[in-house]
Image (cartoon, rainbow, N blue to C red; front, side, top):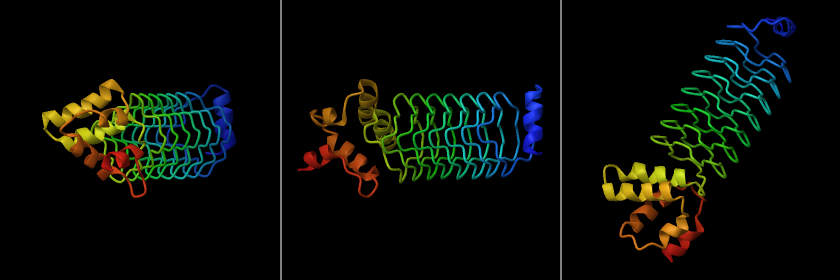
Length: 239
């Protein structure tokens, strides 16, 4: 499908563009709100600042697309392939990204608040400085992802794969999930994870407590740190 044909049809009120082939298309800044692009091929397309809010993009091929600054709020990307896309500063608030391939995607500075990323593949993704407040990351694959300075307040990380990830050390949710996974079925260890998650107290606050399992908690967090990452309070505790 030619770009002008799509834009003309959209302008006339048509919203159904399922299975459209728009690979390498230039749709920069286009208004495609509520468009049905289910199964479309948008690989390597220029989609900077395009408005896909509330659009149906299920099963789309968006590999290598440039979506910097795009509005994707409340869009449905379920089971789509967005690997190696550029989503810097994009708005994905409330988007449905369940089971989506998001490997090696650049989400730096993106707004993913309230997004559903359950079961998504985020391996190697750059989520630095991303807003993930209240996002659903249950069972997501965050292996080797960069979460440095990401806002994970209220996020659900239950069962997420965090192996090799660069951690956001200010996140109660992230630290609590690491401890929860390491605790297994040990009730006393699970209580520590729950304590951090519920109280929202700082890691330094916990280290000041007289807890017999403190050494276990410290070793767990240290073991999860990527080479070169440090938590000053842990170094002080070790000294």
